[in-house]
Amino acid sequence: MHAFREDFLAFSLARDVLKFGDFITKAGRHSPYFFNAGLFDDGESLRRLGGFYADALLASGIAFDHLFGPAYKGITLAAATAIALAEKGHNLPFSYNRKEAKDHGEGGLVVGAPMRGRVVIVDDVITDGAAKREAIEIIRKQGASPVAVLIALDRKERGQGEKSAVQELQTQFGIPVVAIATLDDVMGFVARRPELRTHAAKIDAYRAQYGAH
Image (cartoon, rainbow, N blue to C red):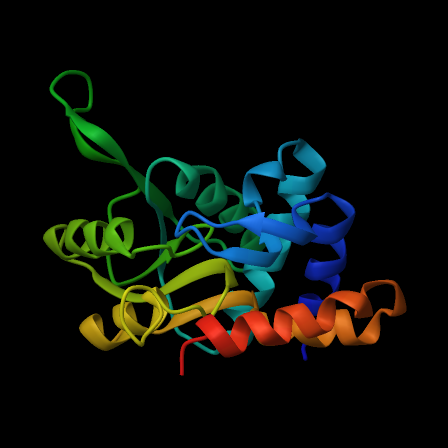
């Protein structure tokens, strides 16, 4: 595992973004862990989060020219990632969309740098994939090419069918999804931490029941 994945999970745990216990997911499932990226809610945590996004994107080997943040969570995440990439020597343009088109001022649906070339969509997670499909459509309408989706955590969990939302998106559009960490990383992280090992069996059982194959 890349060192940044371990560091990201340790940071998420310290910030209570990653928790272990008994939680009810949006789908009504009892999950032994919970991840809430909305709790990266101050300047320092956002600075560090942007660095993790940048590390994951650079480690992926994917070539890219532009970052796009879907409204609303993706806006801040794309900006933080752009700043982190610039600090690492990769100064890139970024943009984001409005929920409703503006008919005055600069107008339009997309704000920021004009989209050109290969665009990476930056967001927190993928649930049903609807927001990412909308983002892909926006990018293509701007004459650019979506080349990847960058998220914080891939739960590798089935939706309504046998595939996860990530797998469905990749299959439908042929676009890779890059995650800072995945459920595999979470399981390895738990196994290496004596204080967390009591949760390992429950996570294993949850994955056996709901994991995508």
